[in-house]
Length: 331
Image 1: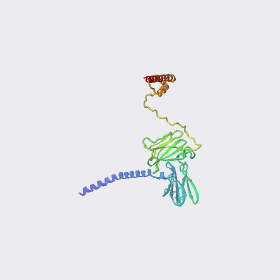
Image 2: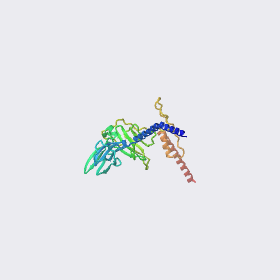
Image 3: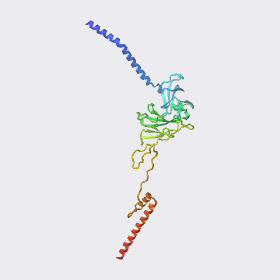
Image 4: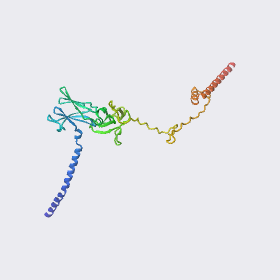
C-alpha cells in the first residue's frame, strides 16, 4: 500500500511540474490582456491637454477637440512647474455648457466659446490674464480667421450637433452631450451618417450656396427640424464651385394626357396636335356659360355663329309668346 501511495505522489508531482509552465503562461497572457484593456480604456488621451499654471496652486488643462473647447481646472500644489505631472484632482470644468466659474478666489471664464480660437480668462483682484485654448481642428487646417462660429443644436436623446462652415464646406460634429464622446462627423462630401447608423441627421444642399442641416428634434410639435449653417467670415471664399439643389425626381405615375419622353436618338417629341371639336348650335334654353365655353373652344367665328343662333332662338320664343297672348285676348 505504501508503494502505491508513493507512486501516486510521484505521478502528481510530475503532472504539476509539467502543467506549471502552461499555467504560468496562461496567467501571463490574461494579465497582458487585462493591461491592454486598461490601457485602451485609459482616460489619459481624453483628459490630457495643454497645462497652464493659473496661480493659487491650480493648473488649467486646455483642450479643443471634437467635443468642443474645455478647461479642466486641477489642483496641483504651489510647487508645480511646466513639465510636471498634472492629472490631479479636478475642481471644475469649463465648456460650452458651463463657461464661467470661481475657484479659490479666481474668476474663470472661456470667452469666444463658439469661435475657432476661444480664450480662458483668469481674473484675481481686478487683474485679468488670458490663456488661449488650442485651435480647433478646422482652424488648424484653414486658419482661425476663415472658420465660422459654431452653432450647437440639441438632437434626440443626448445627442448634440456642432455646425461649422469652413472654406471646404459645411461640417457637422455629432457629440454625446452627457459623456462628450465624439460621434460621427458629417461633411460636404459625406453629408449623411453611415447606412448602419440610425441617427436621423443629414446635410442638405451640401455643395450649394446655403446648405442646411435636417435632424430629429428632442420633441415638440415637429419631430424634425432644419437649421442653416453659419456663414464664412468676410473675406473668406469657398474652395469648391457651388452646385444647385438636386431636382425633384419625376413623377412616374401614368396620366391620361402624359406624353412619351423624348428619345435620345430622335430628339424631342413633336407636340401633339390639338383635338378637333365640333361647334354645336345651342338648343332650347342654353345658359350663357355654354356660349362662353363654345367661344373659348372654337374661336371667334364659332362664337359669332353661336350668338346668331341664340338670337334667333330668343326671337322665335318672343314671337310665340306674343301670338299666344293675342289668342287669349281674342277669346
